[in-house]
Image (cartoon, rainbow, N blue to C red; front, top):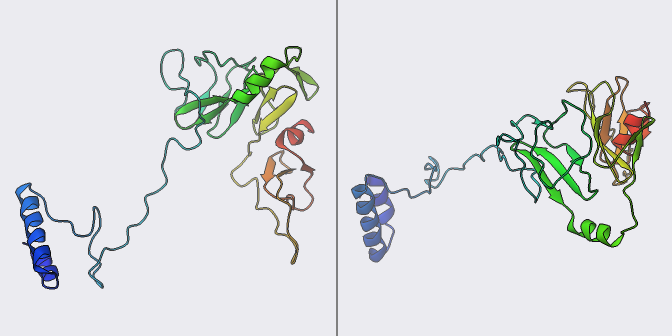
Amino acid sequence: MNALAMSVSRNLPTHLVVLLSIASIGAVACGGQVDLFGPGREPDPEFGGPAPIAPAPHDDPYVGELDGPMLLRVDGTPSGDGASCALDGVAWGDLKPGAIAPGLSLRPGEDIALADGCSMCRCTRRGLSCETNPGCKEVRAEQTSHSLRSCTFRHAQHATGDVFVAGDACGSICSCSDGQVDCNARSCSPNACPAAPKPPPGLSCADVVVTARAADGTCCTYPNGCGGPDGWPIFTDAASCLDSK
């Protein structure tokens, strides 16, 4: 029994000392040592107990993935490289997109709508992750006379599932879904979007999302009704901000 186990055993009942001795012998026989503090933990020099372990950095590659399939490229390679997801050469299968402007890539966290009006794909660190809303599919099947609406953005028409550039200075990407344009507003620089203003003393902001436009054309999203910095135009969503330029 090692010295640490001996010091602990002095204050333990006899049957526990025997068990501790057996565990120690077994561990040594296997070429290891008894870890009284758990894996990866060291004795605290002040109290003799387990020292705190610093939490591991959050590095989960599955964060943000949707419930449906993870798409591959037609050559069988992942549809993303960890930093972006190129939309050219993707094996879409049954998840059909509309017209996609050549050379487009999504950044992790950005979404696009698909041509059925019920599905979407998101760029994640492992590639394009997609899902379909089953309730939406059922409604579509019942509404046999319903045709998916096109979208108008900057005086141009787009069909549902079309993915296109917004035309702003920051390279934002939009998609059309049954008459609704959704955009992934991008920042032109890392510091383009300052912090949202704090509400005046005694007042609070509504729990809504607003988009404000910076002088350089960046559309910045703020998660409360206080709006953006003073003097910035305010919009209800990123698509409205980008479409107004």
